[in-house]
Image (cartoon, rainbow, N blue to C red; front, top):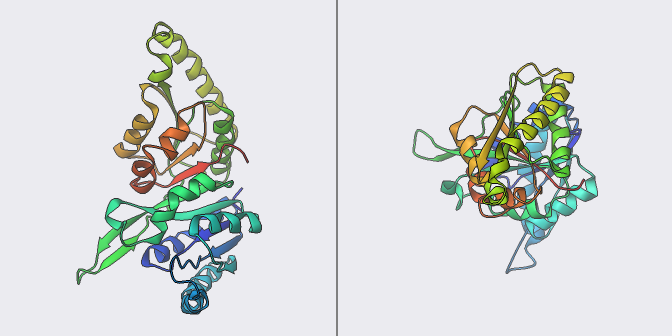
Amino acid sequence: MFRKILVCTDLSPASDALIRCVHDFKTLGLEEVVLAHVIYVANTPGLEEMLAEEARPGLERQQKFLKEKGLKVVVEMPFGKPAHTLHDTAEKQDVSAILIGSHGKSLAKDLLLGSVVHRLLQLAEKPVLLLPITLLKGEGGEKKCDVLCGDFFRHPLFATDFSEPAGRAFHYLEHIVAHAHPVEVTLYHVQDQGRIQPHLAYRLDEFNRIDLERLEGLEARLKGYGATKVHKEVEFGRPGPLIVEKIRKGGYSMLLVASQGRGYMAEAFLGRVANHVVHRSTIPVLVVPGSL
């Protein structure tokens, strides 16, 4: 599932931080990296070749770093609008997943990557893994970027609505459990108050019992892949805000979610709270498209 990934780079310090984490995915079977840097000139066409030449040394430096980690590396430097071009490159190269950096509001003026994340999520037909990039200040006050590597798979949080897309996302969790052996896994479902209130509120206990049994079924599957500690949680409320709040409380190493579900997932992660989850999350987010 992660044998070949597309790594998006804009050659900024943020991208260098991202590159330093790529080899961690060898645990999941990573063998080959497509290192993609998009050349885009909005209002002054004709500069593409010059920009490509300027970018080449940085790409070669990042390529060398990845090769030294034992990975096969293919470099792509296409011209076009970043999100669309990254999507097209992922399809052309038939990658297993796309890796891109996300960041908080304080980095919005500094990083190209953050400006294309939302659109790429809308377009992507491959799973997209977003790694949060943190802005740090160096000793002289200069800006530095960092990514917490080596901890991605310690405690995954899987948010599910039991839809078919969520089922496809669960296969990725099974792969992570089988290969990375997380210390803990949390399975999380929110009873959507917008679907239940007011007419079905009297059946909430029944729904909770049914969905807890569903989570127990998922737990059994994970234990078949070697999971030893699986938490199961069902809550009632607005799914998007509750999932975001759960991330904020900490303790999880990554979030796995389908981009489309029974109604709320698309809103929660590609709609109103997308900026909060994707651009401000302190943990990586693996977004699995509704159809693969």
